[in-house]
Image (cartoon, one colour):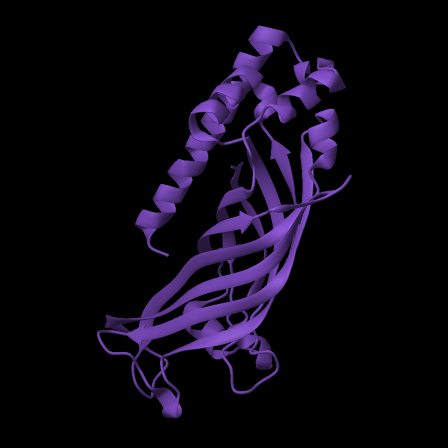
Length: 264
């Protein structure tokens, strides 16, 4: 991932933190510490009853990403030799459609996610371990998934406790491409681009932010249709290994994701 994108992501996260701090300060000055605990259940249920219809969720996702290209090799593999063992930056988005509700549990439905990560380094001189200063080699991966999503939000909707656990399971796919200078390489008869299929599994928890300023949250719902805003953390296992078929480039990873989510 380029330095420009890393700086954009850092700026986004810094801005989100500043906004969260300002919201906390505003909520404390208006209602006092721990105000969300003072709302009785009838008021919370009334607010949920009059909220706009909710059937979609949208996520912005950020994480370190280290593809498992070398997991088939004992010792150092081609990926580690070329790009090192550092983590790459991952950015992703996800849209979930949650039309069904399980009583006393939460919403369920399909979700589609797309992500992007890239690694680059100076290319090797042919037949040598020396780096060529004039050429770069890179690996770009776009991991995607189609999953069943369960958001256990009934506790939040009934009591106001701002925690929403969730789980995702489904099919994963990774689009990948390699380049070296201006030409896509074809080493040993293997193309420099391809698709690797696999499975997708994730577990996480969301912190709803509406309790920080319920009046502003209601106004946001009225003007944009956004019911809830969340900060979330998620463990994701993108097992993109070709579903056992060979040969396949293993481009998945296991990582922790942080992000922002919106219910609409």
